[in-house]
Length: 260
Length: 260
Image (cartoon, rainbow over all chains, first blue to last red; front, side):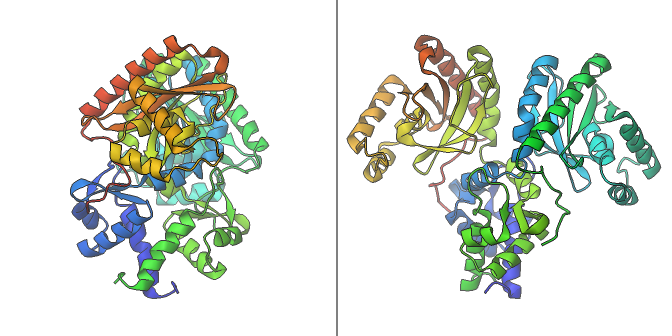
């Protein structure tokens, strides 16, 4: 049975191997993978072969390793963000067609905004929000919209641990930003991540009025047409809410939830 | 160490748990998950808790389990299809803008076309090719384009094991379809999967002339404007090839490749 100490650590090692790929890196040499997973080369080799036999990893020429198409397929087809993205994408396409700007959709994961969908246009402004990319709550309009929609206890936990790596903002500054976001019903940030862009995001709620996502656009600073951007975003957010309520699912739940 | 029989089977069980979600199903009850993974409930429960502690699964209310946002993030950001999709999506957007039809991108996985990207328009015809969906080679234009581009030995292996579940086609029929596809330089199929649609797909090759993907559109049968669909697809496929050659990566390699 697997409830031995050895069994437990195999799961840990599998997780470390699968999680060893840095963002945007699709191929690692086995030796590099072993080092990143903090495993002896022989252990890493054996685990990689076992996982590759199931298609969760793939082995290439010269000891290169990548995540397997089979793993990709499993995760995509039963994605935890599937219901949300299916509800949101048509409305995101509408916004993109109307505003001709990058549109993104984020959820709260840990204390960061995790971008789960993004529609970009080649001519539109650079948008740092890559799909499956993360941004700290306090420097992204999506992050502020998400956090401002959390219960007070969650916001308090967030503010308690808050440290600005840039050393510019304190917890009280972020509290003010969150209060402003809650009062306005949307979040906006100009030029924090990129001095030439401006971001705005609104909350998407589920049937139980929980903020499950943030829908936002990023535009060039000189095109800060506030009056023309907010109404379509708010309209689309309402459409997404309605779709989510019609769907059988209650929307994504949080990774902190655990009642098993 | 993990090279015991018990260690091996933990990897197997982890794979069975993660792979237990059927296509399009994002949430399973723990008891259902255990049954699908062919594990005793207690074993499944323990594994689920271990994987949830790492964010690879998420536990919801009342014993519900879904794939974790963390797993989704890992797979998306280091996706085995990343380089291919990044090269292809701008060209797929061009095609969608010009033709106003569903555009899809597939790779060969096992003996099936695995759709790794799809751009759809709400007004365009139904397209059975969901992202991360699969279609048998012989009923999809993408599948035929992919298989017709494989080395003769791979095609022979494919034809040797070929059985048509519908009982309509024999290996010789499929061989003819593949030869026709290779001669023409593209694949087309009318009304096989859906009697009201027509599909056409061209091959995307990497720097070593290997067929790494198929680019296709699905249109209503009555809009079978052959002359207007093929040139943009061929042009886009060439653009994708050039992008792939410029990228550092040689494109996706096959899950059958194993030299470790």
